[in-house]
Amino acid sequence: VSGFNNLGAINLSLLSAGVASSGGVGYGIGPSVGGQRPTNNNFVIDGIDNNRRDVTGPIATISNEATGEFTLIQNMMSPEFGNNSGGTFNVVPKSGTNELHGSIYEYFQNRDLNALDASYKRQGISDRQRLDQNRLGATIGGPILKNKLFYFGNFEYIPYGQAGTPESAVFAPTAAGVAMIDQMPGINQTNWSIFKQYVPTAPTASASTTVGGTNIPTGILPIVAPFYINSYNYLGNVDYNL
Image 1 (cartoon, rainbow, N blue to C red):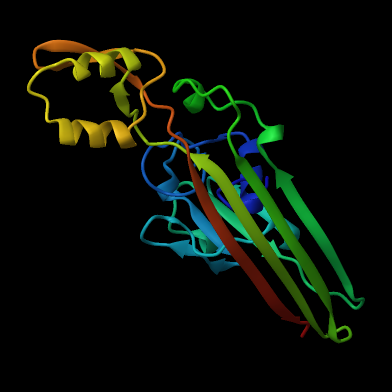
Image 2: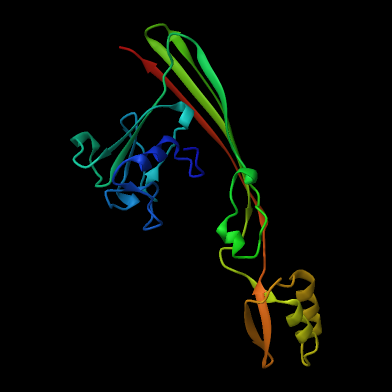
């Protein structure tokens, strides 16, 4: 439920019948409900519209620890939940009570807890690369006026770091291919020396390319670079009992 898409308790909808991952079909955020695309979903916080119109998804997300109730409504919903043919995701934040209460929490995962990603394996990378997420947070709630006015607050700091790879494979000559090009006449030695300075050789040959009429063995470069996203989530609400 912690998830990297930051949808919080909305991920619990995948446990319901008729709900599945969108599988990347069409734009939009959230699962596919009743065979509909994510663009047909409706997001609500405490009964108030929470829809982004540009990419179709929630404007604001509520963390797990700040969620009091979550409801997924499918098919034949009441008129108050109109404008969609997919699912309606209604999240109700927690509220304060007559007693002061709070919590400190952490969701933790890293490369030591995860299996090797297939995208790295295909590039010849056998070591599990960095994928670290520490979701650190705290909540506090209590009364302003007992039995009448209450407050609740939630703060999260989410540092997320991983090893990134190119979207598509990057090919380069193998050591044997570099040796073959070194012996070829007519090569611009200035450009070739710069190429060798900044582009490593591929560990194994998986393809070839033609240079000066000669087939040069090439392979996929195991490129891994650091990638970071650090975000902060805040939530605060005040409830008044009429």
